[in-house]
Length: 100
Image (cartoon, rainbow, N blue to C red):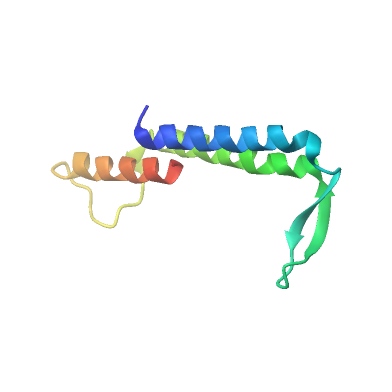
């Protein structure tokens, strides 16, 4: 597992752990949106807190799947047989950083 993947997994695990640890202390109704003045203007159930870790996990998994096909990416330079391996390595590194 690459360092960026380790960071991504640890960050998701930390967000899940934070939600789980605070769950019993949270009220049933929590603010889910704040206006420009900093005051809450939309409310929801505490289950809305699960959206963050779920979206994070889905994003990491999707980027990991997409990373398996660097030949399908859009590159700013023409990919030739001479530079293909270098371009693919750069693209894979970028995707790893995005996952983190």
